[in-house]
Amino acid sequence: MGAGVATKIHSMTTVPAIDVKELRRRLDGEGPKPYLLDVREPWEYMAGHVPGAQLIPLGELEQRVGEVPREGEVLAICHSGQRSLAAAGYLRHLGYTAVSNVDGGTAAWIERGYPTEGSSAT
Image (tube, rainbow, N blue to C red; front, side, top):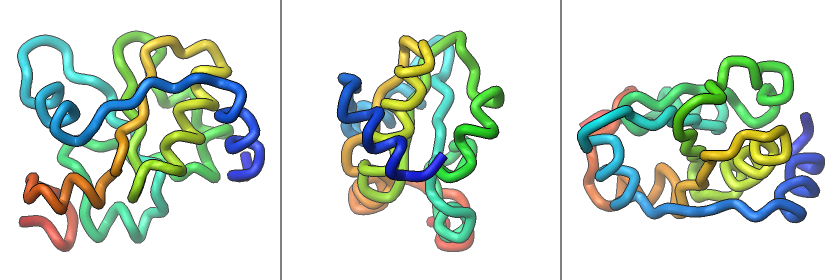
């Protein structure tokens, strides 16, 4: 799936959004944890990612969508929130119902000083 296709799909689909503060609350909270889908490139992911994030680059999502669970909440994240918005729109288009985009993405997570995994982990 090219980013162009995902952009067209997400523009036709309403995608709920959360900020990184809410993401941290959901990851640290009681109960089932959301599936955190990181759609950045592998080099970006290795440089630092939210703990527990699962990497499926946006360009591979169409082929690997079976790896994303249909049950439970899915939160899509990228660097700033644009690629993840496209990914979330694509998943909603496919019938995933509990999908949200993380506004601000990994950049906002790191700016807040939240913990990361990867080579720039704090």
